[in-house]
Amino acid sequence: MTATFWCATSRDAVRVTGQDAVSYLQSQLSQDLDPLAVGASAWSLLLQPNGRLDALLRVRRTGDEELVVDVDRGWGEAVLARLQRFRIRVAAELEPAELGVVAVRGEGLALPPGAEPAWWGPECGFDLLEAEAGPPAGVAAGDAAALEAARVAAGWPAIGREITEQTIPAELGPLLDLAVSFTKGCYPGQELVERMNSRGASAPRTVRRLAAEGGSLSIGDVVTDEGREVGTVTSAAGGAALAVVNRAVEPGAQVSVAGTPARVLPLH
Image 1 (cartoon, one colour):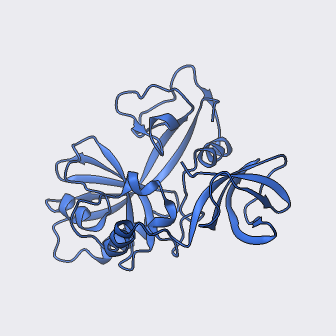
Image 2 (cartoon, rainbow, N blue to C red):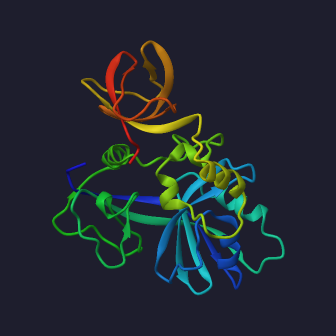
Image 3 (spheres, rainbow, N blue to C red):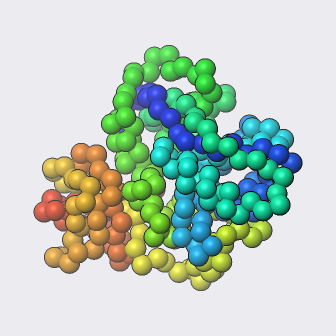
């Protein structure tokens, strides 16, 4: 990802308020929220009790008793329903919201005050989340297609693509270092996460980036290795793609994607 651009977009959100707002989300999310200062944010996973993923989300502390959880568009209702399900005798109110975002993507960008690092970190760009935020001066406008291409190139998983109701956290590899605390208290799904981490166990499948050696890749393309089916493309942008593949398919491997040669890259 080399070209720098901005794109106006939005994310679904859930606002959580009340004296138990922090403690309730702390009991539900994989990330440790106790050290989160007002104005700070962190990525987290929201899991089912069996350890499968409900959502990858960002949680921001916007006040002493207020947090905003934002998630990929189209998934806010599901996140709200999941959080409501376990809210029993808790002094916290949950309400849906929509979050306007000016997404700025590119390499070597300085992180402005108040901006949120994008995806894996500032090396991917940043998000301006305030309603009055405008595009940064001197940066060209992009569109949704450019933003999607940047996501694929960065190797950032999306709900409904790389993340489904069958996904377990271990399939997302390096994302666990960003979105999971292994020192906090209990939360739904923790047992599976902790067990696989303590044993150094790998999931049967994993998410990888693919780089086509000529030609374009498409969602749904079958990935094969020496004629054996090993995975499926879940996101694509030209010659770059994300795919869920067999754990034996290591970075550096040469595979075929619907007949197009491609190289396997780590997710991050």
